[in-house]
Amino acid sequence: MKKNNKIYIIDVTNRDGVQTSRLGLAKLQKTMINIYLNKMGVYQSEMGFPTTHHETNYLNANVELSKRGVLKPIILSGWIRALASDVELATELTDIEHLNISISTSKQMIDGKFGGKKTKEDIIDMMIEALDLAKDKGIKTVGVNAEDSSRSDMDYLIKFAKAAREHGADRIRYCDTLGFDNPLSIYERISQLAKEVQLPVEIHCHNDLGMVVANSVIGAKAAIDNGVDAYINTTVNGLGERAGNADLVSVILALKYSRDLGRNYQLDERIKLSMAWRIAKYASYAFGVPIPINQPGVGSNAFAHESGIHADGALKDRRNYELYDFEELGRGEPEIIETGRKITAGEYSGIKGFRNVYEKLEIEFKDETEAREILELVRYANVHTQKPLTEDELRFIASYPEIAKKIFTMSP
Ligand SMILES: [Zn+2]
Image 1: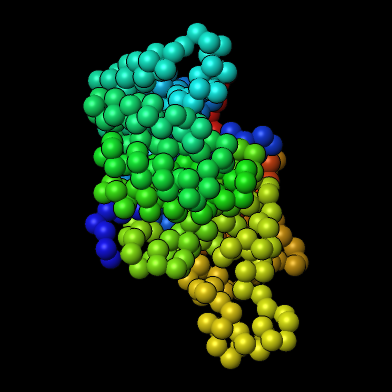
Image 2: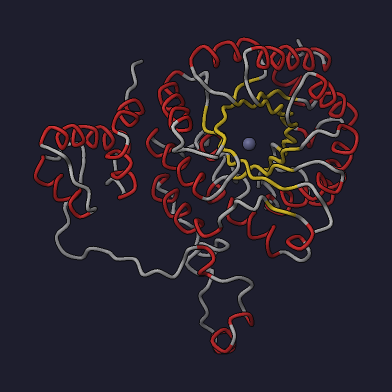
């Protein structure tokens, strides 16, 4: 390793992923994503919107899981606008301890969103006011997001980031909100930002031009080359606004296996690629979006060979046609699919079928009362997810019934 700084992952599936048109997750599913991300060794989950009322119970329940050591060591954070009023509301409604505060920094967006009423200086003042208040309220880490960084004037972006640093920001998020950058431009821009501001950089990229993973890892390289830590924003299966965000698994694979990157740059060593298959399959099921067959690492064709030369070559020595092993991603175990009778648990389940489902998971209840309580929660869970609950979801509900109850509770 040439460099001392590290690359960390901040996954934003539960924020950018779910805010996307036609995509959404039930609060139980968001919780399961947090659990899988934690098992995968991901540094942080941007888990939702602390100013949105229907998120309140979910967010507080997940913070409670963190305090109990269930969601640990992952850091759970929320996303809000960089407005003092948002900080006020977020800290009033939730126990969230980490925040990212976001405001636009490009001329296009400052003029376009604020209707000519805000100057560039106003933007910096608003950010500072929100940041100061968040720190006053005891928020442990605050990332400052410069929305549309890639189309922002570089001198202004540096000025904005320096102001954030002076007021105690923990990171600056460089947002390629429209997927406008390419690996060469993002390397230049993040190098300059990191060098002049000396604040850890988050790299938040979108895939409108198909370069999202390349931009993310090269953006991280730029931060490290200039002496600061890098935090790449990812989503599971790359789902996110429009053409999506940087796919979590692809980013890890690129950092480990792309020429020279793995050798020279240290990825957070807690990352367990072996969780890749499980989290990708779960997210696909929960979102109801199939994994493309050519998806890196987890697509059904990622390790498939058919043509004579390729099949023969891969069978003789897997390194002939495979850069990394499927076992490393947690693949290779046969999946058992019930082809006969199957009892599932849902919103109208009765106690007999329900007990059969849990017996198969080898979970026992201490008495009839407990069984009925868990059944009631499972029914509610299914009202939210509207699809058969997975074994891990059923296990979660049985293990933390009072947390599950909180997650399912919503009162408009
Ligand atoms: Zn985004």
